[in-house]
Length: 349
Image (cartoon, rainbow, N blue to C red):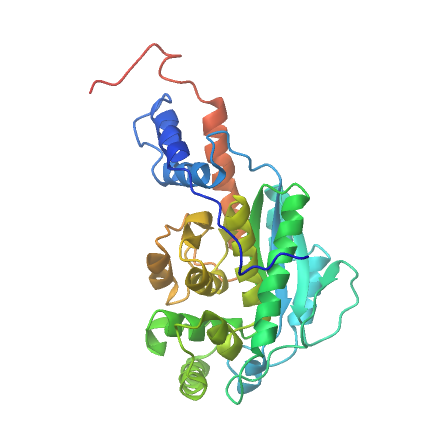
């Protein structure tokens, strides 16, 4: 019988491995804590994996793609159904995330969980739940059953990726309108106003931006999502790719495999995942601080430090893949640097 995402035991974070990792770093031929946040990264990875011998060589970016009915309310730069075109571009290996993944030795897998449009590529996994969510201004985005299904798909996809030997999972997405859904989720779960959370997302005009904020306010007033019911929030104002992202986080946390978040869509998913499994943020790596207004509030809530702040807003998993360079950097330091003993030197207490 297939294991359900809502009945798992999260892998324990090893405090012992974290302590040993910091001791190992302090014993390298460099100033104590001289690598700053890279040392925080090493400690976190050690805690997740339970060892100072980090295993990060084989990794894949799971890009979940879906459409959102809310785009008919003109909250995005275009209301044209282009998510299928963008997703196909990723699947065929020609998008931003693919170019970055080539540079950072990372595989990319695209999973259709709810595209509205058709596509020709055979390189996209078809796990379609529906042809996009409903317009959440007029009805719930999806049924509760479909919300559960979306999380389960992400969980199963991640478990298969781990079974295939992947030692690290990265998160990506494509979905026109998903910053609106993510903003509604974050505002609900963190008890924030729409103005505290919502940003432009895509490149829209000031007039469109004000309209977008009002639409999200109207959505929250109409749907009345309850922050004590994470599945209810996902079904009322979420997206299929957001649910799948939650499932991947859970699978990684269950198996002790680090999960690298991307931007604001990952942020929203993590907030819901935390409501299901309160300790899940201990298993997540925040790749970068999204340019979205509510992003810092989310990371503070999760207790995560972003590795980068580049103003990125591409999606697809691009920010997560860029952060791999830093992860590889700290691995190289651990493997290739001399220790203080090698130099016959020690710092005075």
